[in-house]
Length: 489
Ligand code: PHE
Image (cartoon, rainbow, N blue to C red; front, side, top):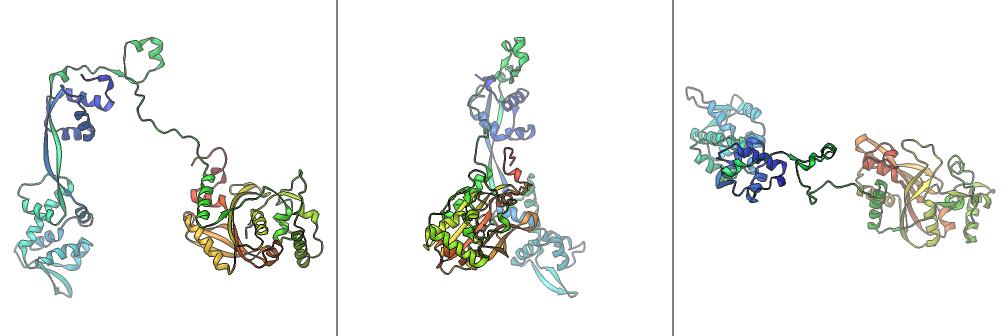
Protein backbone atom coordinates (compact mmCIF):
# COMPACT_ATOMS: atom_id res chain seq x y z
CA UNK A 1 0.00 0.00 0.00
CA UNK A 2 1.42 3.34 -1.06
CA UNK A 3 1.76 5.64 1.95
CA UNK A 4 0.97 8.99 0.43
CA UNK A 5 2.05 10.90 3.51
CA UNK A 6 5.55 9.47 3.26
CA UNK A 7 6.16 10.62 -0.29
CA UNK A 8 8.66 13.36 -0.90
CA UNK A 9 7.58 16.36 -2.97
CA UNK A 10 9.30 15.01 -6.08
CA UNK A 11 7.78 11.58 -5.66
CA UNK A 12 4.27 13.10 -5.33
CA UNK A 13 4.86 15.10 -8.50
CA UNK A 14 5.92 11.94 -10.31
CA UNK A 15 2.89 9.97 -9.13
CA UNK A 16 0.74 12.89 -10.22
CA UNK A 17 2.36 12.78 -13.68
CA UNK A 18 1.86 9.01 -13.97
CA UNK A 19 -1.83 9.31 -13.12
CA UNK A 20 -2.24 11.18 -16.36
CA UNK A 21 -0.71 8.40 -18.53
CA UNK A 22 -1.84 4.96 -19.61
CA UNK A 23 1.61 3.70 -20.46
CA UNK A 24 5.10 5.05 -20.85
CA UNK A 25 7.30 3.82 -23.69
CA UNK A 26 10.54 5.19 -22.27
CA UNK A 27 10.89 6.26 -18.66
CA UNK A 28 14.13 7.96 -19.60
CA UNK A 29 12.44 10.22 -22.15
CA UNK A 30 9.57 10.92 -19.78
CA UNK A 31 12.03 12.03 -17.08
CA UNK A 32 13.95 14.17 -19.55
CA UNK A 33 10.77 15.88 -20.77
CA UNK A 34 9.23 16.44 -17.34
CA UNK A 35 12.47 17.47 -15.64
CA UNK A 36 12.94 14.49 -13.30
CA UNK A 37 16.27 12.98 -12.44
CA UNK A 38 16.17 9.51 -14.01
CA UNK A 39 18.32 7.94 -11.31
CA UNK A 40 16.09 9.31 -8.57
CA UNK A 41 12.94 7.97 -10.27
CA UNK A 42 14.69 4.68 -11.01
CA UNK A 43 15.38 4.35 -7.26
CA UNK A 44 11.75 5.18 -6.47
CA UNK A 45 10.59 2.47 -8.87
CA UNK A 46 12.96 -0.15 -7.48
CA UNK A 47 12.12 0.72 -3.85
CA UNK A 48 8.90 -1.25 -4.29
CA UNK A 49 6.74 1.70 -3.22
CA UNK A 50 4.92 1.59 -6.58
CA UNK A 51 4.41 -2.19 -6.67
CA UNK A 52 0.81 -2.89 -7.56
CA UNK A 53 0.39 0.55 -9.09
CA UNK A 54 2.65 0.27 -12.13
CA UNK A 55 4.18 -2.60 -14.04
CA UNK A 56 7.43 -2.21 -15.84
CA UNK A 57 9.61 -3.93 -18.37
CA UNK A 58 13.31 -3.29 -18.42
CA UNK A 59 14.91 -2.70 -21.79
CA UNK A 60 18.36 -1.60 -22.70
CA UNK A 61 19.71 0.28 -25.65
CA UNK A 62 23.16 0.79 -26.99
CA UNK A 63 24.47 4.32 -27.47
CA UNK A 64 27.80 5.82 -28.37
CA UNK A 65 29.78 8.40 -26.41
CA UNK A 66 33.06 10.19 -26.99
CA UNK A 67 36.03 8.83 -25.08
CA UNK A 68 38.55 11.16 -23.44
CA UNK A 69 40.60 10.98 -26.64
CA UNK A 70 37.48 11.79 -28.64
CA UNK A 71 36.74 14.75 -26.38
CA UNK A 72 40.28 16.02 -26.98
CA UNK A 73 39.84 15.94 -30.74
CA UNK A 74 36.40 17.44 -30.39
CA UNK A 75 37.84 20.33 -28.41
CA UNK A 76 40.37 21.19 -31.13
CA UNK A 77 38.68 20.75 -34.50
CA UNK A 78 36.09 19.25 -34.00
CA UNK A 79 36.55 15.94 -35.77
CA UNK A 80 38.21 15.51 -39.14
CA UNK A 81 37.15 18.45 -41.31
CA UNK A 82 40.23 18.51 -43.54
CA UNK A 83 38.96 15.67 -45.74
CA UNK A 84 35.67 17.47 -46.22
CA UNK A 85 37.40 20.73 -47.14
CA UNK A 86 39.61 19.01 -49.69
CA UNK A 87 36.65 17.21 -51.26
CA UNK A 88 34.81 20.51 -51.52
CA UNK A 89 37.87 21.84 -53.33
CA UNK A 90 37.48 19.22 -56.05
CA UNK A 91 34.89 21.38 -57.75
CA UNK A 92 32.29 20.40 -60.33
CA UNK A 93 34.61 19.39 -63.08
CA UNK A 94 36.43 16.94 -60.80
CA UNK A 95 39.60 18.85 -61.49
CA UNK A 96 42.71 17.68 -59.75
CA UNK A 97 41.92 18.75 -56.15
CA UNK A 98 44.37 20.83 -54.24
CA UNK A 99 44.26 23.14 -51.30
CA UNK A 100 46.50 25.97 -50.31
CA UNK A 101 48.25 24.74 -47.22
CA UNK A 102 48.48 28.12 -45.49
CA UNK A 103 44.78 28.83 -45.94
CA UNK A 104 43.77 25.39 -44.66
CA UNK A 105 46.07 25.80 -41.71
CA UNK A 106 44.62 29.20 -40.90
CA UNK A 107 41.12 27.77 -41.01
CA UNK A 108 41.73 24.57 -39.06
CA UNK A 109 44.29 25.89 -36.61
CA UNK A 110 46.25 23.38 -34.57
CA UNK A 111 43.93 20.66 -35.83
CA UNK A 112 45.39 20.89 -39.31
CA UNK A 113 48.49 18.85 -38.58
CA UNK A 114 46.40 16.25 -36.71
CA UNK A 115 44.14 15.79 -39.76
CA UNK A 116 46.94 16.01 -42.25
CA UNK A 117 49.01 13.44 -40.37
CA UNK A 118 46.15 10.93 -40.41
CA UNK A 119 45.50 11.38 -44.13
CA UNK A 120 49.19 11.27 -44.96
CA UNK A 121 49.63 7.95 -43.16
CA UNK A 122 47.01 6.45 -45.45
CA UNK A 123 48.80 8.01 -48.44
CA UNK A 124 45.65 9.90 -49.30
CA UNK A 125 47.36 13.29 -49.55
CA UNK A 126 50.75 14.77 -50.20
CA UNK A 127 52.35 18.16 -49.94
CA UNK A 128 53.58 19.70 -53.19
CA UNK A 129 55.27 22.96 -54.04
CA UNK A 130 53.20 25.38 -56.03
CA UNK A 131 53.06 29.14 -56.47
CA UNK A 132 55.86 29.36 -53.92
CA UNK A 133 53.52 27.97 -51.24
CA UNK A 134 52.81 24.48 -49.98
CA UNK A 135 49.83 22.92 -51.67
CA UNK A 136 47.98 19.93 -50.27
CA UNK A 137 47.37 17.50 -53.11
CA UNK A 138 44.86 14.67 -53.01
CA UNK A 139 46.14 11.27 -54.10
CA UNK A 140 43.25 9.00 -53.12
CA UNK A 141 39.85 10.69 -53.02
CA UNK A 142 38.18 7.46 -51.78
CA UNK A 143 40.04 7.74 -48.47
CA UNK A 144 38.85 11.30 -48.17
CA UNK A 145 35.28 10.17 -48.67
CA UNK A 146 35.66 7.64 -45.86
CA UNK A 147 36.93 10.42 -43.59
CA UNK A 148 34.02 12.61 -44.55
CA UNK A 149 31.61 9.92 -43.38
CA UNK A 150 33.56 9.39 -40.16
CA UNK A 151 33.39 13.11 -39.60
CA UNK A 152 29.58 13.12 -39.93
CA UNK A 153 29.21 10.21 -37.49
CA UNK A 154 31.68 11.73 -35.03
CA UNK A 155 29.84 15.05 -35.07
CA UNK A 156 26.49 13.40 -34.47
CA UNK A 157 27.83 11.48 -31.47
CA UNK A 158 29.49 14.58 -30.07
CA UNK A 159 26.21 16.49 -30.38
CA UNK A 160 24.16 13.60 -28.96
CA UNK A 161 22.12 13.40 -32.16
CA UNK A 162 20.60 10.17 -33.51
CA UNK A 163 22.80 8.30 -35.95
CA UNK A 164 21.89 7.65 -39.58
CA UNK A 165 21.73 4.05 -40.65
CA UNK A 166 24.66 2.84 -42.65
CA UNK A 167 27.38 4.44 -40.57
CA UNK A 168 28.62 1.05 -39.33
CA UNK A 169 32.02 1.22 -41.02
CA UNK A 170 32.63 4.68 -39.60
CA UNK A 171 31.50 3.58 -36.13
CA UNK A 172 33.88 0.64 -36.26
CA UNK A 173 36.77 2.82 -37.33
CA UNK A 174 36.05 5.50 -34.69
CA UNK A 175 35.85 2.82 -32.01
CA UNK A 176 39.05 1.11 -33.17
CA UNK A 177 40.88 4.43 -33.10
CA UNK A 178 39.61 4.98 -29.55
CA UNK A 179 37.54 8.09 -30.28
CA UNK A 180 34.21 6.60 -29.21
CA UNK A 181 32.98 3.88 -26.89
CA UNK A 182 29.66 2.12 -26.68
CA UNK A 183 27.51 2.43 -23.60
CA UNK A 184 24.52 0.39 -22.64
CA UNK A 185 21.69 2.47 -21.28
CA UNK A 186 19.03 1.08 -18.99
CA UNK A 187 15.44 2.13 -19.59
CA UNK A 188 11.94 1.04 -18.64
CA UNK A 189 8.58 0.83 -20.35
CA UNK A 190 5.74 1.37 -17.85
CA UNK A 191 2.12 0.30 -17.72
CA UNK A 192 0.06 2.38 -15.32
CA UNK A 193 -2.43 0.17 -13.44
CA UNK A 194 -5.97 1.26 -12.47
CA UNK A 195 -5.00 1.26 -8.78
CA UNK A 196 -2.76 4.25 -9.45
CA UNK A 197 -5.42 6.10 -11.37
CA UNK A 198 -7.82 5.51 -8.47
CA UNK A 199 -5.46 7.06 -5.91
CA UNK A 200 -6.55 10.34 -4.41
CA UNK A 201 -3.34 12.30 -3.90
CA UNK A 202 -5.20 15.01 -2.01
CA UNK A 203 -3.44 17.88 -0.30
CA UNK A 204 -0.68 17.36 2.21
CA UNK A 205 0.13 20.15 4.63
CA UNK A 206 3.86 20.43 5.12
CA UNK A 207 3.96 23.50 7.40
CA UNK A 208 2.04 23.72 10.62
CA UNK A 209 1.03 27.40 10.89
CA UNK A 210 -0.45 29.30 13.83
CA UNK A 211 -3.67 29.72 11.82
CA UNK A 212 -4.02 25.94 11.48
CA UNK A 213 -3.57 25.56 15.22
CA UNK A 214 -5.82 28.46 16.31
CA UNK A 215 -8.64 27.51 13.94
CA UNK A 216 -8.42 23.86 14.94
CA UNK A 217 -8.05 22.90 11.27
CA UNK A 218 -4.97 20.88 12.07
CA UNK A 219 -7.35 18.13 13.21
CA UNK A 220 -8.77 17.72 9.70
CA UNK A 221 -5.86 18.24 7.31
CA UNK A 222 -3.33 15.61 6.24
CA UNK A 223 -0.08 16.62 7.89
CA UNK A 224 3.18 15.41 6.48
CA UNK A 225 4.95 13.57 9.31
CA UNK A 226 8.25 14.85 10.63
CA UNK A 227 11.27 12.80 9.74
CA UNK A 228 13.52 13.21 12.73
CA UNK A 229 16.30 11.34 10.91
CA UNK A 230 16.36 13.71 7.94
CA UNK A 231 19.69 15.36 7.18
CA UNK A 232 19.85 18.98 8.28
CA UNK A 233 22.44 21.66 7.53
CA UNK A 234 25.39 21.81 9.91
CA UNK A 235 25.11 24.35 12.67
CA UNK A 236 28.13 26.62 13.06
CA UNK A 237 29.52 26.19 16.53
CA UNK A 238 32.67 27.41 18.25
CA UNK A 239 35.99 27.01 16.55
CA UNK A 240 39.47 28.51 16.82
CA UNK A 241 39.75 32.09 15.62
CA UNK A 242 41.60 32.88 12.41
CA UNK A 243 44.54 34.16 14.41
CA UNK A 244 44.70 31.01 16.53
CA UNK A 245 44.61 28.92 13.36
CA UNK A 246 47.50 30.96 11.93
CA UNK A 247 49.48 30.55 15.14
CA UNK A 248 48.96 26.79 15.03
CA UNK A 249 50.08 26.63 11.41
CA UNK A 250 53.21 28.67 12.06
CA UNK A 251 54.00 26.73 15.23
CA UNK A 252 53.85 23.50 13.18
CA UNK A 253 56.26 24.91 10.61
CA UNK A 254 58.90 25.79 13.20
CA UNK A 255 58.44 22.54 15.13
CA UNK A 256 58.95 20.68 11.85
CA UNK A 257 62.11 22.70 11.26
CA UNK A 258 63.45 21.40 14.59
CA UNK A 259 62.88 24.54 16.67
CA UNK A 260 61.80 24.46 20.32
CA UNK A 261 59.17 26.87 21.54
CA UNK A 262 60.16 29.45 24.15
CA UNK A 263 58.07 31.95 26.06
CA UNK A 264 58.54 34.95 28.29
CA UNK A 265 56.57 37.54 30.24
CA UNK A 266 54.02 40.12 29.17
CA UNK A 267 55.22 42.41 31.96
CA UNK A 268 58.96 42.94 31.74
CA UNK A 269 61.66 45.18 33.03
CA UNK A 270 63.16 47.71 30.65
CA UNK A 271 66.36 45.78 31.30
CA UNK A 272 65.24 42.71 29.32
CA UNK A 273 63.35 44.72 26.73
CA UNK A 274 66.05 47.35 26.02
CA UNK A 275 69.26 47.30 28.06
CA UNK A 276 70.13 43.66 27.49
CA UNK A 277 69.56 44.40 23.81
CA UNK A 278 72.20 47.13 23.70
CA UNK A 279 69.54 49.82 23.29
CA UNK A 280 70.74 53.11 24.80
CA UNK A 281 68.78 54.50 27.70
CA UNK A 282 67.96 57.66 25.73
CA UNK A 283 66.72 55.73 22.67
CA UNK A 284 63.46 57.18 21.29
CA UNK A 285 61.73 53.76 21.37
CA UNK A 286 61.90 53.94 25.18
CA UNK A 287 59.76 57.06 25.38
CA UNK A 288 56.20 56.93 26.67
CA UNK A 289 54.90 57.69 23.18
CA UNK A 290 56.10 54.24 22.14
CA UNK A 291 56.27 52.07 25.22
CA UNK A 292 53.67 51.37 27.93
CA UNK A 293 55.16 51.98 31.40
CA UNK A 294 53.32 50.46 34.33
CA UNK A 295 52.13 52.40 37.37
CA UNK A 296 51.83 49.24 39.44
CA UNK A 297 54.37 47.78 39.80
CA UNK A 298 56.51 50.70 38.79
CA UNK A 299 59.72 48.71 38.91
CA UNK A 300 60.90 45.13 38.72
CA UNK A 301 64.05 43.67 40.27
CA UNK A 302 67.09 43.40 37.98
CA UNK A 303 68.48 39.89 37.33
CA UNK A 304 70.20 38.31 40.31
CA UNK A 305 73.17 37.48 38.03
CA UNK A 306 75.28 40.49 38.97
CA UNK A 307 77.87 39.73 36.27
CA UNK A 308 75.15 40.11 33.66
CA UNK A 309 74.04 43.51 34.98
CA UNK A 310 77.66 44.62 35.28
CA UNK A 311 78.43 43.45 31.74
CA UNK A 312 75.45 45.31 30.33
CA UNK A 313 76.42 48.49 32.22
CA UNK A 314 80.00 48.28 30.95
CA UNK A 315 79.09 47.81 27.32
CA UNK A 316 76.59 50.70 27.47
CA UNK A 317 79.03 53.03 29.21
CA UNK A 318 81.86 52.13 26.84
CA UNK A 319 79.73 52.89 23.79
CA UNK A 320 77.10 55.41 24.84
CA UNK A 321 78.69 57.39 27.66
CA UNK A 322 78.71 57.12 31.44
CA UNK A 323 75.15 57.69 32.59
CA UNK A 324 73.58 54.21 32.51
CA UNK A 325 71.32 53.81 35.56
CA UNK A 326 69.80 50.79 37.25
CA UNK A 327 66.72 52.92 37.97
CA UNK A 328 65.96 53.29 34.26
CA UNK A 329 66.64 49.59 33.63
CA UNK A 330 64.31 48.56 36.48
CA UNK A 331 61.21 50.28 35.12
CA UNK A 332 58.29 47.91 34.56
CA UNK A 333 56.75 47.90 31.09
CA UNK A 334 54.52 45.85 28.82
CA UNK A 335 57.06 44.17 26.57
CA UNK A 336 57.41 45.93 23.23
CA UNK A 337 58.83 42.92 21.40
CA UNK A 338 59.37 39.22 21.99
CA UNK A 339 63.14 39.64 21.66
CA UNK A 340 62.90 39.78 25.49
CA UNK A 341 62.26 36.01 25.40
CA UNK A 342 65.27 35.59 23.14
CA UNK A 343 67.53 37.61 25.45
CA UNK A 344 66.42 35.55 28.46
CA UNK A 345 66.97 32.32 26.49
CA UNK A 346 70.49 33.37 25.37
CA UNK A 347 71.34 34.12 28.99
CA UNK A 348 70.10 30.64 29.99
CA UNK A 349 72.05 28.94 27.19
CA UNK A 350 75.38 30.46 28.24
CA UNK A 351 76.93 29.59 24.89
CA UNK A 352 75.09 26.35 24.14
CA UNK A 353 73.67 25.92 20.62
CA UNK A 354 69.96 25.84 19.90
CA UNK A 355 67.02 26.90 17.76
CA UNK A 356 64.06 28.58 19.41
CA UNK A 357 60.89 30.34 18.38
CA UNK A 358 57.94 32.00 20.06
CA UNK A 359 54.62 33.39 18.87
CA UNK A 360 53.55 35.86 21.51
CA UNK A 361 51.79 39.10 22.21
CA UNK A 362 53.55 42.48 22.40
CA UNK A 363 52.39 46.02 23.18
CA UNK A 364 53.20 49.37 21.63
CA UNK A 365 51.72 52.75 22.29
CA UNK A 366 50.56 53.22 18.69
CA UNK A 367 47.62 55.08 17.22
CA UNK A 368 45.09 52.40 16.37
CA UNK A 369 43.99 52.34 12.73
CA UNK A 370 43.04 49.86 10.00
CA UNK A 371 46.39 48.14 10.09
CA UNK A 372 47.75 48.96 13.56
CA UNK A 373 46.75 47.85 17.02
CA UNK A 374 48.35 48.66 20.37
CA UNK A 375 48.76 44.94 20.95
CA UNK A 376 49.76 42.38 18.36
CA UNK A 377 51.78 39.19 17.94
CA UNK A 378 55.35 38.58 16.91
CA UNK A 379 56.91 35.44 15.56
CA UNK A 380 60.32 35.47 17.17
CA UNK A 381 63.14 33.17 16.22
CA UNK A 382 66.77 32.68 17.08
CA UNK A 383 69.43 30.20 16.01
CA UNK A 384 72.60 29.94 18.09
CA UNK A 385 75.61 28.17 16.64
CA UNK A 386 78.75 28.65 14.65
CA UNK A 387 79.40 29.82 11.11
CA UNK A 388 75.98 31.44 10.85
CA UNK A 389 75.77 34.21 8.29
CA UNK A 390 73.36 36.51 6.51
CA UNK A 391 72.87 33.65 4.03
CA UNK A 392 71.77 31.34 6.86
CA UNK A 393 69.30 33.98 8.03
CA UNK A 394 67.89 34.51 4.55
CA UNK A 395 67.67 30.75 4.09
CA UNK A 396 65.60 30.21 7.25
CA UNK A 397 63.27 33.08 6.41
CA UNK A 398 62.86 32.01 2.78
CA UNK A 399 62.07 28.45 3.83
CA UNK A 400 59.58 29.63 6.45
CA UNK A 401 57.69 32.03 4.20
CA UNK A 402 57.63 29.50 1.39
CA UNK A 403 55.82 27.05 3.67
CA UNK A 404 53.10 29.70 4.01
CA UNK A 405 52.94 30.26 0.26
CA UNK A 406 55.02 33.46 0.00
CA UNK A 407 57.54 32.51 -2.65
CA UNK A 408 59.01 35.88 -3.48
CA UNK A 409 60.89 37.74 -0.73
CA UNK A 410 63.03 40.85 -0.72
CA UNK A 411 65.52 41.83 1.99
CA UNK A 412 66.40 45.43 2.70
CA UNK A 413 69.17 46.69 4.99
CA UNK A 414 67.90 48.45 8.11
CA UNK A 415 69.12 49.45 11.55
CA UNK A 416 68.54 47.88 14.98
CA UNK A 417 70.69 48.73 18.00
CA UNK A 418 71.21 45.03 18.71
CA UNK A 419 71.82 43.50 15.26
CA UNK A 420 74.43 44.05 12.59
CA UNK A 421 73.74 43.58 9.79
CA UNK A 422 69.98 44.05 10.05
CA UNK A 423 67.50 43.12 7.35
CA UNK A 424 63.90 44.07 6.82
CA UNK A 425 61.84 41.36 5.13
CA UNK A 426 59.29 42.07 2.40
CA UNK A 427 56.95 39.49 0.83
CA UNK A 428 55.35 39.80 -2.57
CA UNK A 429 51.58 40.00 -2.35
CA UNK A 430 50.09 39.13 -5.79
CA UNK A 431 46.58 40.65 -5.28
CA UNK A 432 48.04 44.09 -4.63
CA UNK A 433 51.13 43.53 -6.81
CA UNK A 434 53.32 44.95 -4.05
CA UNK A 435 56.04 43.88 -1.65
CA UNK A 436 54.70 44.20 1.89
CA UNK A 437 56.88 44.49 4.98
CA UNK A 438 56.51 41.37 7.06
CA UNK A 439 59.42 41.38 9.47
CA UNK A 440 62.75 42.48 10.80
CA UNK A 441 65.85 40.40 11.41
CA UNK A 442 69.58 40.33 11.81
CA UNK A 443 72.68 38.85 13.42
CA UNK A 444 73.05 39.85 17.10
CA UNK A 445 75.99 42.12 17.87
CA UNK A 446 78.86 41.10 20.11
CA UNK A 447 77.88 43.99 22.42
CA UNK A 448 74.64 42.16 23.13
CA UNK A 449 75.88 38.54 23.07
CA UNK A 450 78.94 38.95 25.31
CA UNK A 451 77.21 40.15 28.52
CA UNK A 452 74.55 37.42 28.05
CA UNK A 453 77.31 34.77 28.08
CA UNK A 454 77.18 33.91 24.39
CA UNK A 455 80.14 35.98 23.23
CA UNK A 456 81.74 33.05 21.40
CA UNK A 457 78.62 32.38 19.38
CA UNK A 458 77.08 33.48 16.13
CA UNK A 459 73.33 33.97 15.96
CA UNK A 460 70.68 34.73 13.43
CA UNK A 461 67.35 36.09 14.69
CA UNK A 462 64.08 37.60 13.56
CA UNK A 463 60.84 39.14 14.71
CA UNK A 464 57.95 38.82 12.24
CA UNK A 465 54.47 40.28 12.33
CA UNK A 466 51.76 37.64 12.77
CA UNK A 467 48.78 39.86 11.96
CA UNK A 468 50.43 41.01 8.75
CA UNK A 469 50.83 37.42 7.62
CA UNK A 470 47.24 36.60 8.58
CA UNK A 471 45.95 39.62 6.63
CA UNK A 472 47.89 38.52 3.55
CA UNK A 473 46.80 34.89 3.90
CA UNK A 474 43.12 35.72 4.30
CA UNK A 475 43.11 38.69 1.94
CA UNK A 476 41.66 41.15 4.47
CA UNK A 477 42.49 44.83 4.53
CA UNK A 478 41.40 45.83 8.03
CA UNK A 479 42.63 44.25 11.23
CA UNK A 480 39.07 44.48 12.54
CA UNK A 481 38.10 41.89 9.90
CA UNK A 482 40.46 39.48 11.63
CA UNK A 483 40.25 40.33 15.31
CA UNK A 484 37.30 41.14 17.53
CA UNK A 485 33.74 39.95 18.06
CA UNK A 486 32.43 40.33 14.50
CA UNK A 487 34.47 38.29 12.01
CA UNK A 488 32.75 37.47 8.74
CA UNK A 489 35.28 35.29 6.98
N1 PHE B 1 62.67 42.99 17.77
C1 PHE B 1 62.58 43.43 16.40
C2 PHE B 1 61.26 44.14 16.19
O1 PHE B 1 60.43 44.16 17.06
C3 PHE B 1 62.66 42.26 15.45
C4 PHE B 1 63.99 41.59 15.48
C5 PHE B 1 64.18 40.44 16.24
C6 PHE B 1 65.04 42.09 14.76
C7 PHE B 1 65.41 39.80 16.26
C8 PHE B 1 66.27 41.46 14.75
C9 PHE B 1 66.45 40.33 15.50
O2 PHE B 1 61.02 44.69 15.12
